[in-house]
Image (tube, rainbow, N blue to C red; front, side):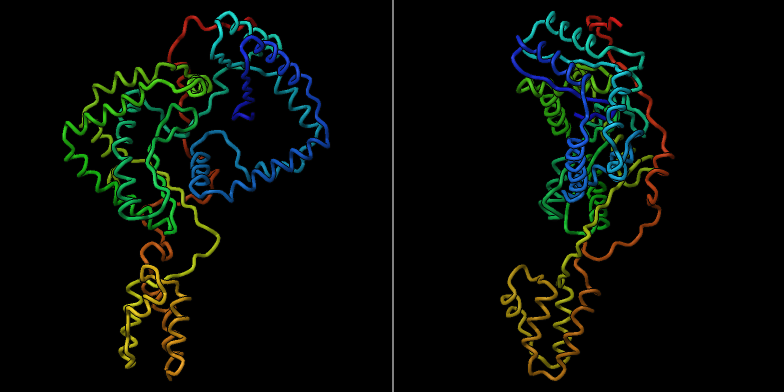
Length: 432
């Protein structure tokens, strides 16, 4: 499988034959012969996969752009698609040779297997691929923000948990902004930096959704201030249980270990150590972090907002204010209005599509002299009295709009790679 800085090879099976399988796979990798016919098929599949990505869920695409903007080294799918057609079998073959000439191995062996057998597998990998002087630090991803310390990481995790349930309850259940609403931690490139991610996928305009999110965050200030110590302790206990919960299966355990190996941090006891530090976190710690990093009034908050807009125009609807204004026009024209009649006829929640609304009154006005004038007023009223969240977004003051993605990234400073957070004395050392 592809990886941001190389290849990721995952092998599983019966432990007594695992070393044999590893040797066979690595031999195949080193002796790879690229065939033009097969390459053409793979290029077509890859091209289709990359193009179809932009037909997926909008919140997934927004996450892609957000991560790209805050990752030091990453190519966009557009850049890859541009280069894909010109790639030849010879170029792939040359790339494989160059790739395998600069190898830095990171190996995890987990499951029902003895240490001696795991070391044997590591030896097979080193014998098969060799090891170059390539620095391990060169393989670590870096985010385009400042790194965090352990205390900040723990307090931010607790704050995110406190905000998660109210975000869902207010933005989705009460305000009904959209079906997909969630508030969760955001782990950036390199995994040493964390952020808070609020996602809302809706038929409303992005600008309106952002206004509602900001209003929610503003309201959470009083919620945090009024939170009792008992409620705060319950939040801490819930997060502690989550961190100390045993992995349900080997796959979960392996994924956790691989994450720390890939980043180069080796902080395998992070959850245990963070749970220990969590006991000392106070309500004031969480509140001050909220005020300095999350609340809209903060002068030190760093915020990236990604707006995704559908290319397919949404059918316009008639708001309650627009229908009431139309009723007033009818009365001025001396036409009796039966509000319940048209609502019952069109069904729904009293907010019909503009086309259905116009067709209904067109039938009603068949014998009216001023019918054309009244019907022409419907689209005008729909534009004048839009449904909240469905009018065109207007630019906001005091906001920096990103017009050039590369220029924006160039203006940010890459985070410092902390390297291994823990030194493990019994880890095998390369023989090369």
